[in-house]
Amino acid sequence: MSVRRTRVVLAVGAVAVAAAAIAVAFTGTASAASTLGASAAEHGRYFGTAIAAGRLSNSQYSTIAGREFNMITPENEMKWDTTEPSQNNFQYGNAEQIVSFASSRGIRVRGHALAWHAQQPGWTNGMSGSTLRNAMLNHVTQVATHFRGRIYSWDVVNEAFADDGRGSRRDSNLQRTGNDWIEAAFRAARSADPNAKLCYNDYNTDNWNDAKTQAVYNMVRDFKSRGVPIDCVGLQSHFTGGSSYPSNYRTTLSSFAALGVDVQITELDITNANATAYANTVRDCYAVARCNGITVWGVRDSDSWRSNESPLLFDGNGNKKSAYNSVLSALNEGTPTDPSSPPPSSASPSSSGPGNGGSCTATVVPGQVWGDRYNTTVNVTGTNNWIVTVTLTSPQRVSTTWSGSFSWDSTGFVMTARPNGSGNSFGFTTMMNGNSGARPAVSCRTA
Ligand code: G3I
Image (cartoon, rainbow, N blue to C red):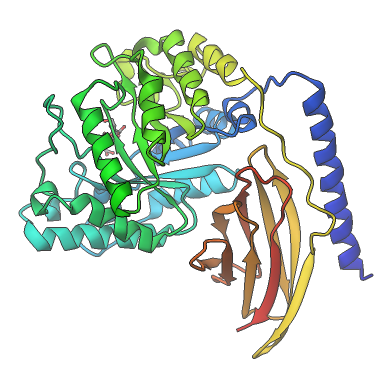
């Protein structure tokens, strides 16, 4: 056995021992995770926050964000006005800053928002008809392609329904391009980023009795019946005095889920951070198997878009509020899902193969393991011009990738990685989706 292979086997063994120790500790104690993300992960969910790139240099902000949350939504940095300030000139710097903050910590990213009537760049003013429709579809395609493989779920279309009590579509320049603009955006997003979940996202869709909720429900049901590619519904859940936490919220979540889509609580904030409403929101999500997780719309009250209502879980000095404790204890209720198992001993740590320009070896280095996902690094030797095939076991899925260029086959379970100029090592996060034992197989060939 070579020295390198011995190291790999030792590393795999060390991870196995560590994971076994976690499993023992886990089954031997009632779980009481001490951060929001860790607790949610133990229950197969995420707990996220919106992040502003401009605040990441504030160490109090970034420390809380990195410690507490396991999902991040860029608050403004992926919107149309920021990512395409002039037509076909795409700017991703601020968004990349957030994505890199997240991926370097194993935190996943929700993409927000590809098509929306608000925060459009000035150059869309005066555009209409097929010119505007094509500009919107090009925007969806370009942005989703740029971030392909790095986004857990996209808010493909945001806030397309009106608040008129009749469930009408919102009048907007996009709506005036034709009623099918929403499904067209979803189809473009699916082609561009086939592995991401595609969500419709809106506010005031929390009360099951509201006309707006029913209108979104009917649209999703129609999309599912006609094969329009939609995977999830985002409920923003900005609970204010006028739109407070509704007692039938769980019915809303479960009714959407019954259509065959996931539900995600995407922008939660509650006037004066009512601790009971926060805890009820968590319990309602846990009660619905297809509720993937909860995102709060900011870290500290001072970061909130409505900071005068102090609606978040940390005060302006970064202290945990009573709503934080209430959320954490609600997240810790119930029986945790199975923790991760160690990689099976049959996992192949490396594989090599020939190609047109010689041979190469891909070595798997198991990385950090969480309750719902694990990281993997692959080191390639023998050539700078490699193609590595990574084959997952269903229903596991890659949620995040880094330091390579990636594409998937039509099943979504076979990923092809190529160099992107950053060296001969790449990495990815795999969601276990209920299968905690399997680990990917890798093989290498030269281009
Ligand atoms: O960055 C500029 C700054 O340079 C300038 O000096 C200042 C002057 O107004 O504006 C700053 O940009 C502001 C930006 O937030 C960053 O703070 C914009 O004016 C302001 O409009 C923008 O507000 C955002 C709002 O969406 C815009 O619609 C909020 O941060 C953001 O939290 C909010 O998020 C939305 C979701 O995307 C969709 N659902 C509702 C939610 C709350 O409105």
